[in-house]
Amino acid sequence: MTVRSASEPAGSALSFQQSAHLIQEHSRWIAGGVNSHFRANIAPTPLVFDRAEGPYLFDADGNRLIDYYLGMGPMILGHTPPHVIAAVREQIGAGILYAGQTRLEAEAARLLCDMVPCAQRIRFGSSGSEVVQAAIRVARAATGRRKIIKFEGHYHGWFDNILWSTAPGLNAAGSEDHPAAIPGSAGQDPQAADGVEIMVWNDLERLRHRLAQGDVAAVIMEPAMCNAGAIEADPGYLEGARDACTAHGSILIFDEVITGFRLAPGGAQERFGVTPDLTTFGKALANGFPVAALAGRADLMDLFATGGVLHGGTYNAQCISMAATVATLRSLTTPFYASLEQRGRRFMQGMEEALLRAGIKAQVSGFPTIFHVGFGLTKPARNYRDLTRVDRAAYIGFTTALLRRGVRALERGAWFMSDAHDEAVIDATLAAVEDAAKEVAAR
Image (tube, rainbow, N blue to C red):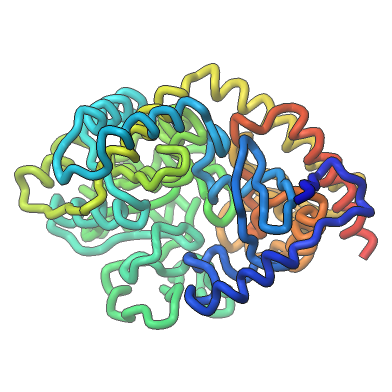
């Protein structure tokens, strides 16, 4: 089968007919042909892949695609880092699942505690959604309170008690003073919203006023809003939230499932110098293996050991995934980030210049390791409501044009970087961006 890539001229646009056929065929056994809601409804079709290598994916049609999905964020070392693969192969030879403890999980926990400012104790899980639930449970047990504050546009997993106002329409979202809790799914238990209160992010005075009532168990937020966009908090916001939670006895939870091990070795909390009480991690923690973690203050985390707070899971700290975690964390050094951020900054600048030359109004904002491209925005977004002004249809036209040129980018606007995206790969991507931008602008 002939492999075609982004380096080919624009006239040789890639085809995805085999993927479309396979998705239809697979739908006989898999609902919708996909196993996650977030992989469905991709233009021109959800893709079926045969293999990956470095920064590339190879699909069922024989196309080689430069990948900026990166597994929706985890693959910070690229798709096939040799040392991670070697560690996993070695562990497979020693067993798969013990229903007991290993030295590997202790080493992974030690590394994480050494890297992350808030991490005095760790518990491992299998997904970000799961460890968010553990964090909420601990916060309620520690405070004796029920109310959890979350923010519009921040995603903390797909469970009923937290999947509220992740992407609400502004016609239903209510006022900024009193946002409505909008369910994220059909079939969601409406009573699950009783323990959650929605607020607008990046408004410190509103948050201070609400916490002063003294009934909030926890505030959970992405310390940089990277699920819906790539928005940095206003100066003083994270510090103010930290102080207000301390003053009023509420637990501050940072959801670093995306930002953890992307923005710095110790996550967003290291980069911004604000230490939460609890943090959830996932994605880049194990470079694609199903590992998540809850980390935090010893007195809170020890409630799992001595305070009657239940946390379980058959696959928690599964030894193969722990081997991948240790190998990944050992790679995430300060020089690693310096190199990756240098390339990411060049990429962001090149993207911005190419869109400007094409006459496309857009904001390229965020961080060199994860940034966001917002078509239609004239200034950087501060919160979810600003992001609702994005021209989504035009941006999907852009990502579809890129895909036909061999570049795969998320339709929600996020671009993830990996160590495998070297200067030559970035150059090839920017050439495709230039060409795709001209096509979209011509429409």
